[in-house]
Amino acid sequence: MTDIHIVGAGAIGLSFAHALSQRHNVSVITRTLPTDKWLISEHLGTKVINAKPVVLAHTQSLSIANCFICVKAYQLPQAIADVLPYLSDHANLFISHNGMCDLSEVLDQLKPNQALFFISTARGALKLDDNHVKITGSGDTYLGACNTQAHSIIKHIFGIYFSGILSQSFIHEDMTLLRWQKLLVNIAINPLSALHQVPNGQLRQPKFSATILALLNEACTVANKAGIKVTLSQALDNAYQVMSRTSANFSSMAQDVKHGRKTEIEAICGYVVAQGQLLNVSTPYNAQMLQALINKH
Image (tube, rainbow, N blue to C red; front, side):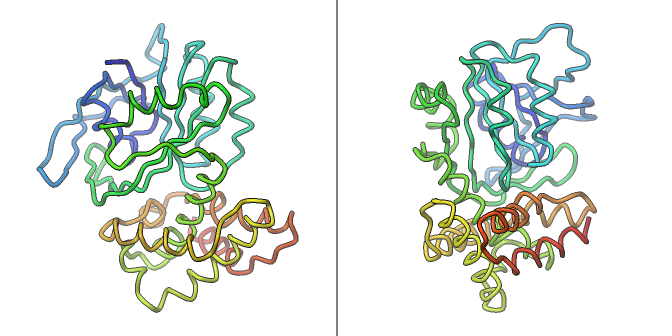
């Protein structure tokens, strides 16, 4: 049993907190103390999440050995800045977010023996209110290594924090491919589910198929031009599989639009548009989706 700190009391952060607390001591770092205990609802009923809140501003001394950062892509730089002073010299840092961001900026701030991992998960979870999360669908979770230190210990880390704890979890050997595969699923699901305010499963309707095909075709073309080996057929298969597994779940972007919050569209369709400009690949569908969601902010 080890100590784990989680940044991000959202749907994924709290669902990870619940799973990891079965074997470890879990603390959730928040800006303010919650008004009540965190709850999680699964098929077996509702339980209290066995995790304690921690407010960094209220702590005199804290050493973080294992830190899961589950925040929006645009929140990652601030989250890293907040926990960096508290990380132990051999800390394991796990990040999970939708879309793509420049991980080199994170890596440059880490010490030689600090390991950086990326988590890609298709677990369906919905934040019902500030203190209550509902698990809405199953899905694969992949762990990838982002630096040399992480590569050297990934099997050991997987055995401690993922195997037998997070169901349907696997090690992925190609970090860059893993992040692109997650991005492609995000592109197929998040923008359309947000604009039309429908759960993931509704996107399997024929009326959405042409747009999904066009968005993924552009993204796969950009990825291939960048040297990433993805295929349109596999991207479509992965996306529709996630839609099926999380059919009742509303994507995080759909939730953001519903509640008037900023979305991660710049790190999803915006990333494809930006890379397309660099690689001279036309991306009109992703550009259109980017603008449509920006207008929702």
